[in-house]
Image (cartoon, rainbow, N blue to C red; front, top):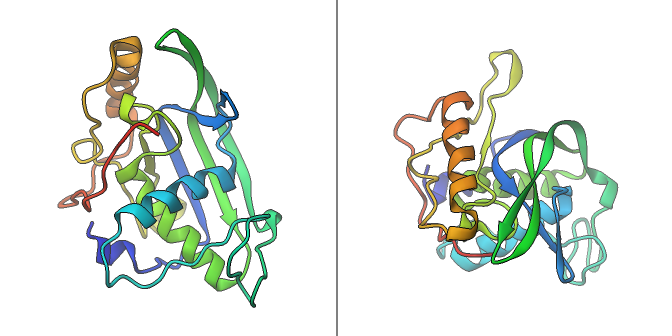
Length: 207
């Protein structure tokens, strides 16, 4: 998967994202395991802006309650309800990181976007980036490994669970063994890898 391919919306308006290792999000001085739709895409938007090469189609995604050019008109922000969770199957898992307790989400969430086409296209590009960049905080410690599951009914437009390209750098001792066990378990049960896919030059750092 190249950056050019990621830059083209797939036409999907729903995505099943499987979190293969505990996924957590910063909330003030703490962490929350809930993969809120806007928290997920906000983090992916930051990675896109920091990593995407020049020449890609512009990705415009203002966030609810955040200033900047909007979707549909100047100053207009997307409706928070336009991106929502339609299904969830998962649990939380607690990991110790440098003496701190961090709770992360494990499992699958189906996100749906029923906003304007420009919003759907932006969310689609960002969620297809997730298998390469990871999701949430502490990604450099093996948190937030994720893949997109195939669409049901055989209508697969995108499937990404390439465990080779998604491998994280060396993890810290405080959480490495637990995260590695989750990665091995995911490798046994996750969808098959996409043949010929490659990492589109996205750095993985501690979030």
